[in-house]
Length: 222
Length: 238
Image (cartoon, rainbow over all chains, first blue to last red; front, side, top):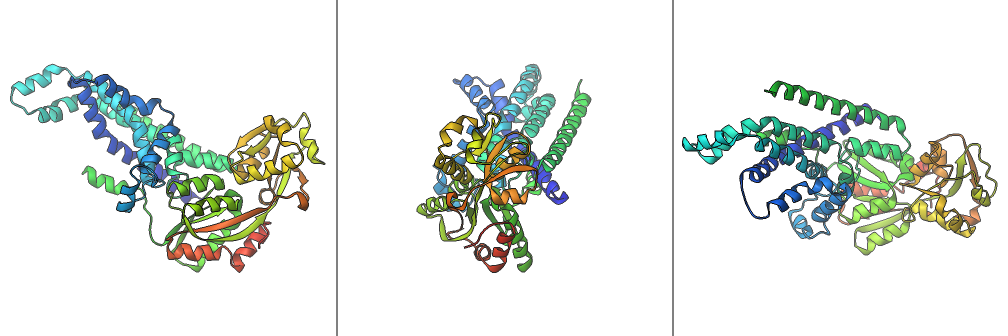
């Protein structure tokens, strides 16, 4: 395996992980805030649905995604009309990573918002601050530690995704081959040396991510 | 700002001077060489090859994977795709043969030796994977399939089957002669006579509506240069 190939695989993995995390966080934050601050019927069901991708077999998540994104699925006609092929593209890798990372991010955000003292929000609102401004300037900053931890979990889970990705994105060199897919395909080919090199890169990325995350969290700890 | 950050990290997207071909993993060596020659003859282009079990790649093609050229180790998989109007042209490009291998130290002189008690694990992919089907066909000819069924450890594709023996995860396997040739290692082999060989034919298919580059690559798969690469790797050419 060439150095260029290794960098390409690591680069794709990192970009897809970052993109998935960026895409997921607004939803995770929104859903978490609703679950903590609003009362509505079916809340337990929503909470269970949020956690679902975490407990489903990743392969099942992948198959569901393929069904939704593929040309033969219920939305196939739409993709055909738009002329986009989401399945077996880097977008599919990102979607798979986002879907499996979402529950982790949402759970962490939920706990973070639950720990925010409601009185600060009440005081702000009695002083005439709009609900959105209260959220943006009071709740979110107070919950930032948990929210960022959620983003970290989402990112790390996303870059390690395998089962769902293999199904919905295949293992296409240069297009959808991430570190975990690359390790698997090289083990299958009997190229243990290359597989180990990719393992080492995964290890380094994982360690660096956690180190940066832990450093940041330690600094933020009151 | 978030949108800006997002566009900066958006993963690579397809371009016109690049083509994606999916191929049976047993063709890895000759196809990589053919693709290199093709890129040299068409400067600025890039051939991306996705290797795997033909059955896996065919399933991906059916589900909408952007493969423009597909080379299968079993023509039936191309027939199936044709029924779904996937392709617009097909061509038989190479032939292969099977061989029985065992880790060095085992004795293999006739097919029945596979029943030896010390050969505990026989590596084979599922029947849907071409080599899994061909190997079972040959085992059944000798009345060995049922007797060996519970010793089969499942592998992903042809190359993984040989790798399983080389890594010591399996004691024996039935693989393509070209794979044995491509990865030299100490092994015991049992040749399968020509009369018992199943017809192993590689068929290339061009997707309907494929681009110019894909068409050129599809043609290049059966030209003089390609035949030389296939012969080098131990394949027969039609």
